[in-house]
Image (cartoon, rainbow, N blue to C red; front, side, top):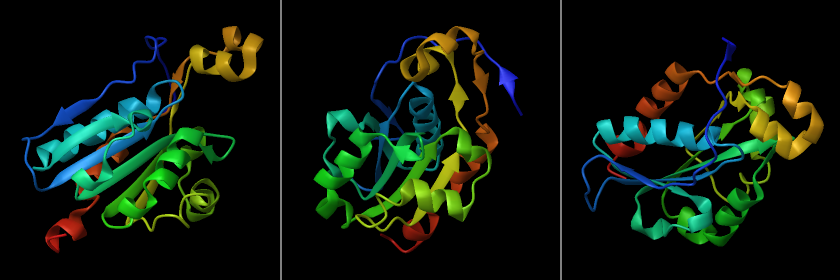
Length: 187
């Protein structure tokens, strides 16, 4: 499902709100992105959860959103060399106590997400699993673009076409099911 795609615009670390603004059934999607792909995935998850009836805020981890304002928290990060972005790990460390009081799920966006399996998840989530016990976690395939490549590999970026491997059906399906058990139990 490789598709050549146009280069994306410069990264904008924006916040978004989806669904009816309520005090209950609130979800925070805190994200850390490298070249914008993770933000786009976070927004799509937010739209889907908003349509399910949740009140959803999608906020960059760098804004350090207040976890205690939410009943559910999704934390997503871009992955580079099998590791989450440092700001995502720091967000979990800073908010570990509050995160252990709510239902948490993890998602990662990376090229290794082309084949989501427990071995890959163990490596990628190995740093954060001991801090928070997630109710769900998933790997999503990402996007490769010249801007992101130039940040990590300099000169070869000009020879790198933008390729989008994201499986939007998988992303929407996961967003339809995440927190379903917790929601049914009234958590």
